[in-house]
Amino acid sequence: MNVTAETYDELATEGHVFLDIWGPDCAPCVALMPAVDELANRYEGRVRVLKLEGPEHRELCRRLRVAGMPTYITMRDGGEVERLTGNGLAPDDLEAAIERLLDGAPVVGLPVPDHLRGVNTDDHGSSRQEGDRPGRARQRAR
Image (tube, rainbow, N blue to C red; front, side, top):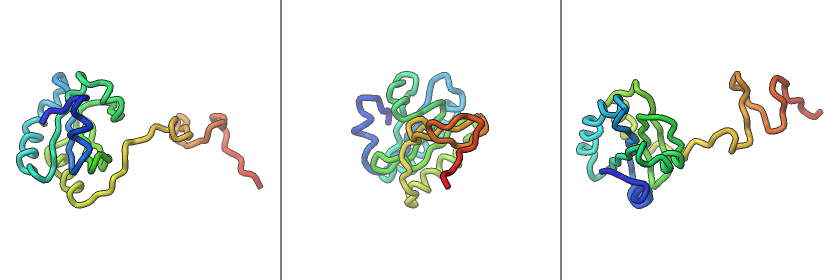
């Protein structure tokens, strides 16, 4: 079922949802479409499979923090359970994510960027708190 920015809140916030965020110029997206359609048929009544055309709904993609396509998100009652991205995905990966959703995998929510959590990372991936200077270890009070 196709979803738009206008219908997203109505269709994606209740029950088990598998959201396929795709684009017509995304070769991996187009290649996996038949598999997504098959999963929609196989899990009908247990998981709502929704398709969102990313380039047509950029603001919703920003809200969902989608950085690239393909992106597949499993959700329970509007909360994110798992996110799969990249062009190396296979149909089995998508089905395994649906199975984990149905098996009760916990809701983790949308990823929160470091700048919104008050934590920065340096060029090497090390965490530092606001006000720390890059390249210096944080000194602890004794």
